[in-house]
Image (tube, rainbow, N blue to C red; front, top):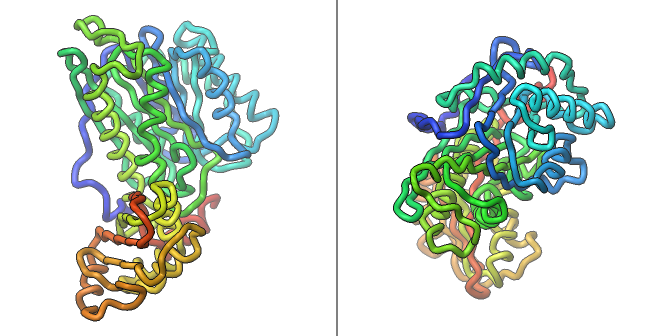
Length: 411
């Protein structure tokens, strides 16, 4: 598999985090010669928060996670790639439960403290008959320094593993945050997008974790789109081992605690890093595109307009062809269903203003605009001339390779 030309020049090196260990295995679920099963185990119960797909056809693992989230504690996480265990009926629910029970036996906890995620083909029954022995072996082999292996094991059509790390101070004690994600296709924001697992050694109560996670999703994972399609399996989990308490970090039980400010900022930065890595690995992508909308009736209206542009096949194919066809941006703004003042509309490609006052900029240069479109990273700015609402989303171009990848996905 060819690595995306937008891939980072180097991958983040994630340090071990006290309280969490992991191991991976090749279970032969779909892929030959690569790992596809991850077990992450926590030495003590970790606090947990999560957000999940809003799809009405949510996968069985999503339903299991939603149910177990009420307990606020986790001792194990199991993730498989190659099969989404979605739209698999009663057998799918049974497979998720069997997986949770096998992991619980392997690490010595209750099944309600196990979280499960699956990614891959929809509609194919997931054979978990061999998971029991595999998870027992993984539990014994789990190591604190396995983040890169973990990121690779959850990949499907991803061309590179997605990792990020950060640190912050809570009441003078340094805490760390590590995160991994997967996603390249079937990516559109409707809570969080794809699979992502973020772990910190901070000591934070579950309700506070949930507030932090929900506050950070909107302009990170919920502000990216590859193809406008929301997965049945989208899962984003945030877990806190609490191990930093042994170094003097306080237990945070109030989302308004001022000691959380630096941590919240670091978490937001890590989530944005992971989200943008997903866009850079969009199936067949050759261009990374930032779309900023301002002058809208509200921030929500601005986001709707930005997503209308970002999800437009005509806009995305023009970008793929390096065509400065700003008329397609006008079209996408107009169809968004939010207020836009036609005769005040302004559009920029990079720093080149291509349209102003409802018509082509009088100083428009096709050569200058075309030069912008040749860059691997392109910024499109749109002022709709109504009020002060603003939003930024990120997407990629739509190429022939996207069609080829998805045309052969089940082959």
